[in-house]
Image (cartoon, rainbow, N blue to C red; front, side):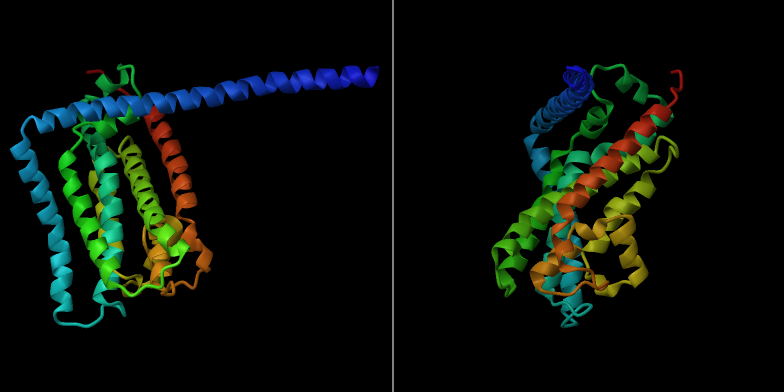
Length: 298
């Protein structure tokens, strides 16, 4: 009888402890759902505003497409004088370029407005977001949602398509799976860097260029083969800021190329895990920065 009573009490205690955990998880899921809804509503407002002037939208989207295409034109000009760059042929470099460009374009479309946070902190307009009944992250990310950034995504996908049609790859189910996995995981990694960079601006208010060094600069870096860079730099973008998981590691597996650091081949399938880890760290950094924010009083 005593043992039965003890077991019942222990079960009741465990059940009581489980209720707050379940409630906390439900609360987190509800907060995420509210953030997604707020983002969708704000982005939809900016899309409607953009499409009110469709000719202007077409011209700006084409301008964005043409401006990003100049990077690949530079690569084409290089290959008009050389046969290989860092041991990689033009289609292989185009594969790296297209994968990095499309992944970054997706992140830039969704989170590209995060670099304006420092300006909001300086002029006090962040205070207006804090009093609204919507998550601040969703408001900052969706602010001035720029549909013209589809030009960058389109250009990256076109180059990637050219590479896939030109390359002689022995396709397997794993290699086929890696293509969409690489794009989605890479976009998530870049989006996490956008959020972490914005969180840094709570402390260093004029730090948008520091953020751009890891976002736009990281995109430029990943468009070229890792064999062009010093191994210390490759280690840095693999183990410190894991940009190599955006395209280098999975792309080299698809191309059948060895990674310069002699890492195990299974890491080519790690981008989803790395993306989840980056999201978690970016979320922690964002919450810490938001808690540390002090209003200007305006």
